Length: 65
Image (tube, rainbow, N blue to C red; front, side, top):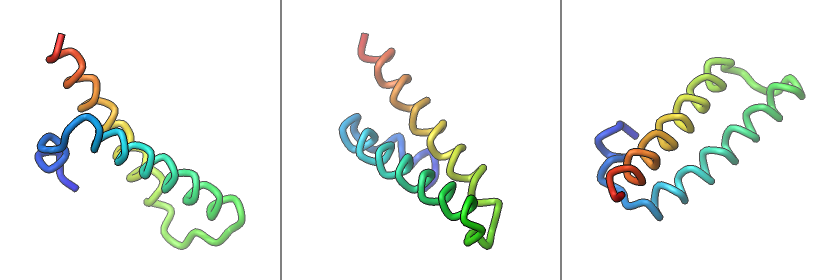
């Protein structure tokens, strides 16, 4: 998803996306450890996705105050 698509989501939906992204990152790391990961560029992509969602959640939190 692009940043604009994430911005359109509510805080609850972003929280759900964050949980899913964390689970995806865990699965990618597990595959990397067991040598089953084919594309190693998935690790930084997943980390950036998590950081992007966390940033948007913080923006919404600060904007609401």
